[in-house]
Length: 288
Image 1 (cartoon, helix red, strand yellow):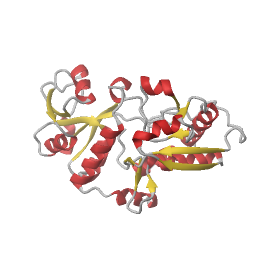
Image 2 (cartoon, rainbow, N blue to C red):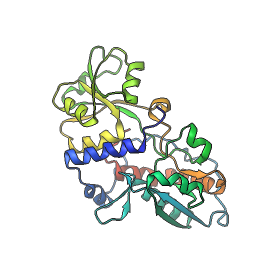
Image 3 (tube, rainbow, N blue to C red):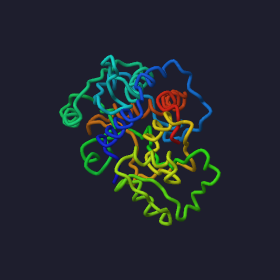
Image 4 (cartoon, one colour):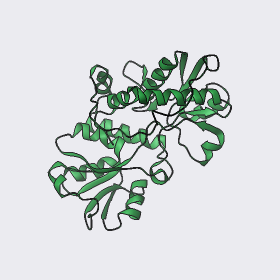
């Protein structure tokens, strides 16, 4: 499984939102919160890369394409406005390049054809990097990776040792990439499989399982609503074979100038701290 599909991500987020009463207004209000800079963030991008600044004439504007159903990256808020991590990122890119940009919203099932048909210059909506998409599009450098994480009850934190989980009950989603990863690298654990992420996390909360293993990004939202119960433990696990290549921006094959301009922007945004600030604005509980 190269990368969790957008639909799966969207459904899981929706399930968490409904089940725990998570308010998107909470996220919208984070614009007024000064993000912490104390958390270490991984360097998916080299801030010292030697990518040359693009000539203004080569990329006078960028037409971004986005979907509206990919919370918290691209979605409509209660006022109907298109918001999200990716929307803010595109705004930062355009501000840094000092160019005019537009954002077009498309249904996900049409968005790839829109990009191929020259309806836009860049697709910023979580298109998975796999063999099929790599033959149709170019991609920017990775700007956000989605690691797997263990979650444990706070009271059991002292008892967690990733190298010694023999016979420990680990909650996991049935047939998921995370279950397959456990089968390969943590063969001594006792997997307790569930049909949904919420069921698996509930088993941890109720003390029925020792830990949960799954997608750190999605779980961070659950932790935000259950902060007194549980927390991440151990390291973040990055593996492109199981958990995907990460978040990237897609381009038509002939948009080399736009791709280079965006890669330059991403490196500069990492260097000046804007990329870290954006991450902490949308993900106050770091999944790294």
